Image (cartoon, rainbow, N blue to C red; front, top):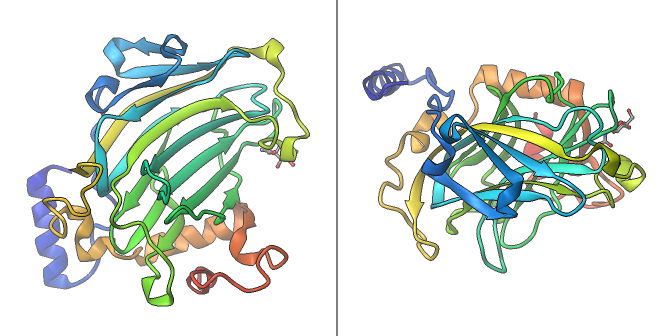
Length: 293
Ligand SMILES: *[C@@H]1O[C@H](CO)[C@@H](O)[C@H](O)[C@H]1NC(C)=O
């Protein structure tokens, strides 16, 4: 969305006091080098079309990954990914935000590979102050190895929303009022990686990586980052409260988005820590809000 259109959107929604534009601003595709650099195993990253598209390669020697140049406090981050095709059992493709300290905050997308023809699992998690254990798992409504799909995270002071294309698959509300820590004062970097995790990824570790099928290749493009850049220590950033993602229409999902989230919940959910009574005999406080979905 152009900035003038965006302004019009803001004016209209405040006039009508309804959420007209609750879909995040359209991502702008850029080249890899604009926002990212390789983290490790540089020779396992391949570049195409001047870096507008890249591949990560995993073989029995190593996986690989890349990270954002900047640290961000709130914003909208998205990646187009085409997952490892065929036999991807044992592999994990991850796209996540993380702060770099001991009591760290983290927002995770993890794609767990599978044997040929068997479905991927998308696991999401949120860490605040070093504590995670908030996994949710879904199947996708498409084969993520056939085409690129857009995976994005919207993060502001009110909520963290995970999107697959434009469909919200998870929302983690700021439940500070219920005594739950919410990531709000530690800038995060964005990370992407492909690695071997056959001790747990596929059917709980029963299915091992078949190295005769290596290299395993995941494709990336888009590399969109629209966040408030901050130094690692900064608890605030210059535009805090004034960016598009801080506006009222992004503080909650709109009715159509709630409906879509409910659809994902009903049809595709495999696991939700909020309903795992064995693990949590006492419901984690933030799960009160999860129940209403
Ligand atoms: C892999 O396929 C099996 C059999 O369909 C399924 O039980 C499992 O949830 C799938 N995904 C993963 C990552 O294990």
